[in-house]
Amino acid sequence: MDLDDCSKDKIDNFLNKNMFKSHWLYPYIIPIYNNPNLEATMTSIGIDIIRKKDYIQIFPTNTGDLDEAKINQFNIDLKKCKNSISNLDKYVEYCIKIYKENLMEYNIY
Image (cartoon, rainbow, N blue to C red):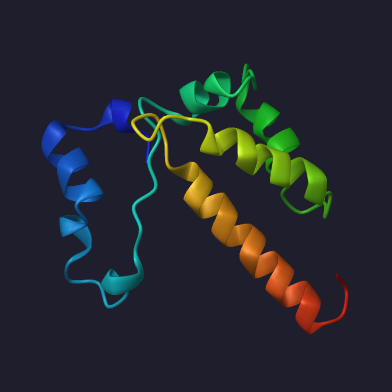
């Protein structure tokens, strides 16, 4: 969630998970945020986003262009962000974990 376009109440309810209380996946939900927004998070780690299509270079979609070394470095850079800016590294780290588990399962890794 980008925190720059929400009310204080909505931000608080997102961060403390109150907005998910009635969802059956509540125990597993980890709110991921960027303060004030994803563009600021990317800028703080040295990635300038000028147009929305620039995200394709960082987050490949349907092309299968994932470069494992690049995504690992991206995660290291995200970890350098102060927690008050973003916790996107938690999501990226989880994705890397799932990626590795599935590749190992199929002997691709």
